[in-house]
Image (tube, rainbow over all chains, first blue to last red; front, top):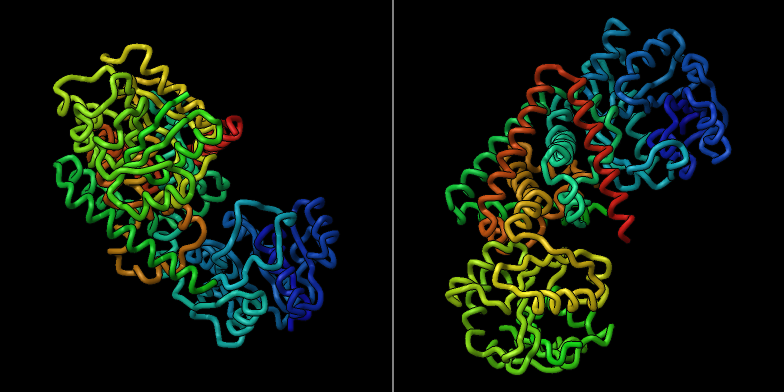
Length: 291
Length: 291
């Protein structure tokens, strides 16, 4: 049971966390914090928040759990604002998509890794944003990856795990750098590929016709290229090394397929397509098995 | 009004064409032809077909319109079976995803380009196949591209255009080679990229975790990698030159993005993402405007 939860950044991620915890009766009071007063007020109207503050230091006063759900680029300044304002027993977690950069931000601000900060990443989201988009079921059966630091003892990690479990999620623990490597492949690479494709096609001569004769497959394939560009610039640059490595590795594999096709090695082309289709069926069964 | 329509290959594409024409009262009799007797019988039960034949020559007897809706690899043998069996006034069209290869097949079989063959390509489909998946609305407001050959006079082209319009589609005409170039970018390239990604990831060390922590974005991005591998091997190899050119061009653009990211040129990364997002919104408005 959380006495008072402070949510810094009340959007889809933070707002849905509050709603999910209320649903399971796991939280007493929810205090929101953000820069958009209208959004915060809407959070109160929707029953997401009990009250709000625009100053993070004021918002976390007396809170035993603080969830930082802001874009990666705002992490460092939020950490700065929390310095000295946290309650004695407070545990802090975040929801950033890259863990190495958030941990580096915390270390830079506090001079050392704080034992009360447990980095986390819920693998969930929709294409919508803001507290208006929040809903209690967002985390149901979704994965949340916690990446404890060497400074974390069991207590704070267990409390953050309990938080996400109460929100309906399945929690796993992972080394931060390994998290960033896996997410580079699974999430950051596809985003970069989709952005690169739409950007590339927009520069081709037949651009108008290309988009005119694109159909459902293209719409699905490029859906993630409709994501917020600044947020994804942040994610991709925060995970630069792993993403560059993944991009280079993919380019090498793609180059091999291209040369097989160019050389008339149609058996190899079929092999790649067959393996991909079989692997994706495996992936779908994995998703279904979890649902 | 079509007196007798022969459909060679009664799957999603051919079956839906028959249903759409029946809906608008544009067809008298529909004769199906295929290798799977069970599928053909199901076509009769579903009201798609009036009757069926397993021999293409028998199926097209007395038909004034013949629609060849078979995989690309079967085109040449179907053309061979039609030689000498067509009615005097028959017009033949096809639904293949690549036009250059189909036209080459026709020329190889008939020795010259037949004036009665009008190549076409409906830009429509679902992930399902077989006559069971056919439905009358598949072509509503979808594009059908006709790629007349130098041998086509106005009459046959107009009749095929009327066929697709009666099925609910919007018909445009295009040079065959230009069709193949545009579709390489819009359809064949994304399929190759998605297959290549899933195949590549399946070979990486963290394969198990990669798929385990993939979410909705990855599922959408890779949906087209669940398509029939043999069918897509056919499409990609039939459109080899244009697809190889598109792959190489994309790799060059992707390489540029990778090097910008590696070099810390985050402004360039943002520029690519912003342009892609804006272009995709334009594309979505285009799709909506048509619906």
